[in-house]
Image 1 (tube, rainbow, N blue to C red):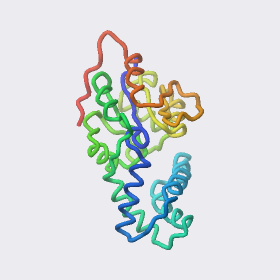
Image 2 (image 1 turned 90 degrees about the horizontal axis):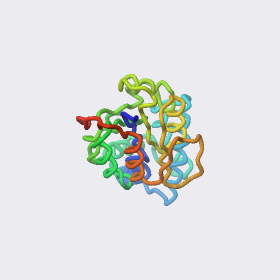
Image 3 (image 1 turned 180 degrees about the vertical axis):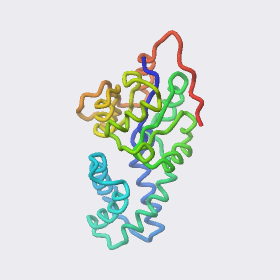
Image 4 (image 1 turned 45 degrees about the vertical axis):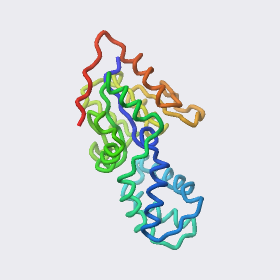
Length: 238
């Protein structure tokens, strides 16, 4: 029986692409930088590459912030201060809260019968603010973030720390996330059940326990997995 759900935030509950685009547009206006149409494509390529190194333990989050827009501007041929732009970009990203379709409805339904916990590699203050602005924070019992736990997904020690704080066994917890590396591989290595959020319907890798293409599909799945004579009390929230 599933007694708790770990939920990734970016690209699972909040649309990171849309949030990043919104933040970059505001940062560009503040910095007086004109961004070409291909900016967000390059942004995603650079960001994904840098975060992959974070997941492998080869780079820190601070190093990502120091390099990201410097690399993007170099790739785009923009003569601007990448570090200054990153600072402005993060200021706007801190308040970005564009949800993935169906996220609010899913959380409202899940919170009625199973405790919910965020599991994120993002900064605690930033992720708390974004969830709050989106109206999602009251659905969560707690937020588990790498900067507090001390390990980054997919490190099994991240998930072990979550389990210790929950007081649950791996088989009693399921993680829903979009990343096959940070979320799915990490959860599977730690012995948790895993559900891959795959809206693009890409070919499955790492063989997650379950796969969904719409967040609405997760609710009936969890109802089956949590079936018991009595449901857990609803989480108290913040």
